[in-house]
Structures are given as C-alpha cells and as structure tokens.
Image (tube, rainbow, N blue to C red):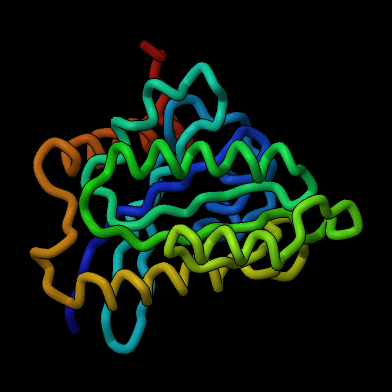
Length: 208
C-alpha cells in the first residue's frame, strides 16, 4: 500500500472557526480552543482507494497582528482551506483578502477549498450559498459548508476527504511530488515535537 504526504494550510479571518474545524476533524472533539498564535500543526492519516494519505495541517492565526508570519507557512503547501463565517459578511470579505495574499506567495499548483463555517447558525446567515459557490468557482476552488459544534459531524469530514481526493488527482501517488522538503519538513517536525512537549498543538511565535 502506497503512502503519500501532503501539506494543507488553513487560512481565514479571526473568529471564522478554523481551529475548531481542524480539531473536530483530527481529534473528533468539540472543545473550544484558545486563539491560535502564529500557527498550529496537526497530522492526520486517511485511507482513500487503498492509498494512505498523510495530511500535514497547518492552522494559521487569523489575527491581524500575525499577518506577517503567515506567508512563511505557505512554503511547500499543496492545498489550502480558506474558511469564513457564513453569519458574517465581513468575514466573507476578509477571507478574499487571504486568497489574494495566498496567490501572491504561492506559485506551485494547489488544491483550493473555500469553506463556509458555522452552518449551525444558519438562521443568522449573511452570505448566501450561491454567492459563496460563485466566488469559489471564480478562483478555481471547490466549496463546502460545515459546522464543528454539533453532536454529529456536519460536513467537516467531507471537507478534508474532498481535499485529500483532489490532492491525489493533482499530484497522483508519486511520493516525490508534493512532499514537504527541506526546512519546511524540519519546521513541521520541530513544531510537532514542541507541541507534544508542551501538551498542546500550538506553536507560538512573535510577529515581526
């Protein structure tokens, strides 16, 4: 059985629910996390069509004061989840700024997935599904909606499953294609070790 490894970055404005979504997927937990400082690193394996794909998931901080750090996490990224809060028109607008920054910093082919989060609050929706789909298509991304705060999974598994399948389509199963290399891999390993030692999944950094 072949194993491939790919790097996924999670982007979006503060309060969009990025970390809650990642934790729900990786840990199957509904715990409310503290705001991310710099970036958090998670690793998760899944099996698709007899291929084991290991996702290195980098959850980036959405606070403005950490914006200067985020581009450093783009290096060697193979996919990006761009998350916004469906109950906030401002969140949707801010999310588009993250996309612009992403395209300015990454030249290699990437899987893009726009994620409308917090569908458990659909009665307060400010961004229509059709509008979000139209935007996702305009940047060559897929679109999914989810909630990390329900007793039963609402779309979170589907988001990451879709990304994994799209990564296989884009890079195939060649282990040398799309693999994090050089200092990017070393940073991932170091941060993972620091997280284990500190008892959490957050790598803390100070902005420049």
